[in-house]
Length: 148
Image 1 (cartoon, rainbow, N blue to C red):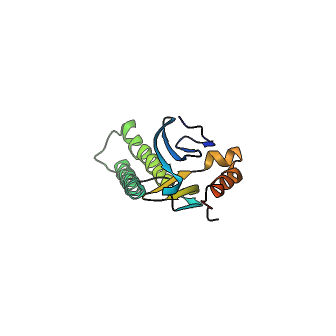
Image 2: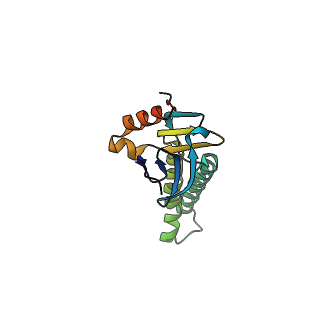
Image 3: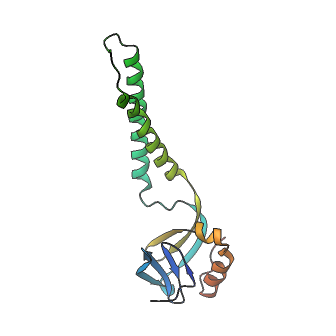
């Protein structure tokens, strides 16, 4: 197992290359010679943003429709009872859909490795630890001077 210079939940950097981690175990190593470009930028880490955006909009739309139906039930002369579950139907999906939209629209500092494939990783934990300048120096030493 290589000794990582920098390690995160999903990413490890060593002298061998970039290590993709899952549950702390290396499942793939990308040698530095296969990486053409590295960049630091504000971006999104989610892979299926479009699908999550569509689901979030759909769930919020359903919640709004359910709220309008519930409002109509309050003033309908045919409805004599409204159960507590009916009050919760618009609320819970609304919060789930709102969180999905928040996750899609949230931007954070990421590092992007361009090679055969494009790999994007969050830098949140490295920023908290104050290791950003060390990472930039390490990548510059490996010949991957990141943009920005």
